[in-house]
Length: 75
Length: 205
Image (cartoon, rainbow over all chains, first blue to last red):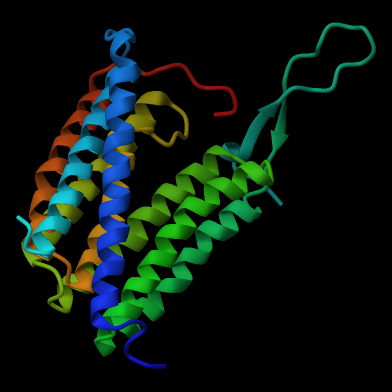
C-alpha cells in the first residue's frame, strides 16, 4: 500500500472542495429553511429547536467556508 | 430469540373486507437487520484508521473517516429501503456515532494531529450530553433517541473535525471554533431535556 493516494496539491483541493462545497450548500439550505420557518408557532418547543438547529447549521456553513479561504490565504 | 421492547414498530393491521380498519398492531423489527449491519460496519474502520494514523498516512486516514461518515448516512437510507426503522436502530446509530467519533478524536489528539484541549472539551461535552439523554429517558419513561436538530449538525461537524486533523487542514481554527458551538448546543439541549415538557410518544416509538 502506498503512502499517498493523490498528490499533495490534488489532496488539498479535494479537501477544500469537499469542505467548502458541503459547508456552503449546508449554510444556504439552512438559511432558506430558517426563512421558511419564520411563520411557525414559536411557542412550540419543536419549532424552536428546529430554528436553533438551522442557526447552528448556518454558523457551521460560515465557519467551513472561512476555513477554506484561510487555508488558501484568501482571508 | 427475545427482542427488546425498543425493536417494536407499529404498523396498521390489514383490514378485512368492508369492516372498519383495525387498530394498529405491533410489528417486530429484528435488531439484526440491514440498516443496523451498515451501522455496525463502521466499527470495522477503526483498526485501519489507527494503522493509518500510526503510520503517518494522512490521506489513508482521511479516506477511512470519509467512508465511516458515508456509512453514517447510508444506514438511514438502508432502513428506509428495507423498511426496518426502529427506535433501537436510532439509538444504536447514536451510540455508534459517539464511540467511533470519540475514539477517532482521541487517536488524532494522542498522535499530535489535533490540539488536546479542544478535544478534551469536546469529549467532556459529549459525555455530559449522553448523561442528559439518560436522565431524559428516565423522565420520558421509555427508550427514546432524543432528536435535536442542532446536535445532528454538531455530530456531522465532528466527523469533519477528524478529517481536518488527518488532512492537516486549518486544524486549530476549526477545532477552537467548534467548542463554543457545541457548548451552546449542549446547553440548549439540556434545557429542553430537563425543563421543557416531554412531547407525546410518536407512533412506533
